[in-house]
Image (cartoon, rainbow, N blue to C red; front, side):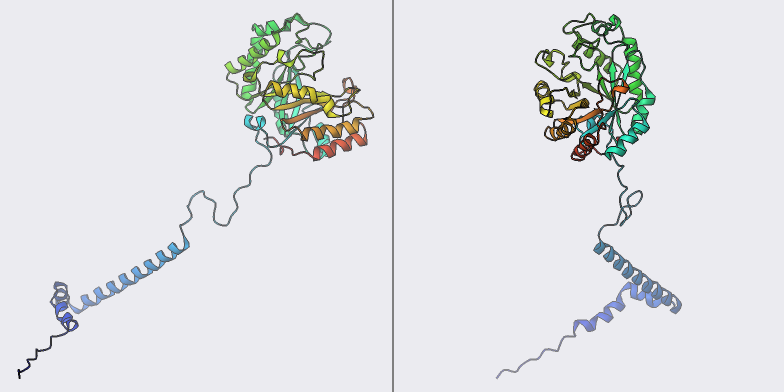
Length: 384
């Protein structure tokens, strides 16, 4: 029977580590240091380890909390962002496509603080358009421009190429052919430069109601001929462009059409020369609805151009149907989204107007206007 041989048990590895550690150069260096130096090194090691542990804990907390908020001008956590200014920014793009219907007024002294305040008190909202008139013997009115904006409305300037006076009297110096030929370019350039300097937008309603015979810029009087109106409009527009004017909204505004009148295309300068198209909305003795008043002209306008449509002046004669017709006017507006706004002509016969167009001629008419305006989605005022 073979004899079993037993190997001597090997020493466990963990018992060999102390000897190996003592053999390391660092251990030999440690043993060679004086006791006081050893104590100092031990303290440094303990403090370093503690600092590392604390730093690791802080990093973990930050990672759990997410990325840190940026410093500087950023809004502090938990605080609200600064509120936006109320109203509508008066920019050309906002006027071409406003965030609601533009509500305007024309009053005898517009733009006028007291007249605007009275209007706002009656209807509960301030107008966002202030319409007033200037003739070609008048310079650009910077004070009226600034007052319009102070009152919260964009200025709508009806710019009439004549010197005023009796409409029945011709004024050959303002013949359309002379305007187109540049006879008044000095005045037009000065006006354009003043508009440019004003900075904020101006709606310019140049030579309105050209399809009627009562103004000297009608092609049927004052020595004017067919085609002269378009030529004059384009020339004035081009002078503004040459002066670098970019803050004008060009508003082409004929009067209401009727079967005996020439088509509006006879007077239309073209989409490249116009920003708004529109018409007036004055009642006669025959209409009982807004569609009867505006329908035919509206259809002709929208067939002529895709531009936004604005009612340059509106008013209802003091007849028995006035309250109902005012209400129906607002109902008609709500059904025609191409219409971006209107101006109410708040003039009476005592102010020099032919009729009392005001909506305040009776409690019923006033209530109809108040209710109608309240039913519309208006562009927020003020214009700023």
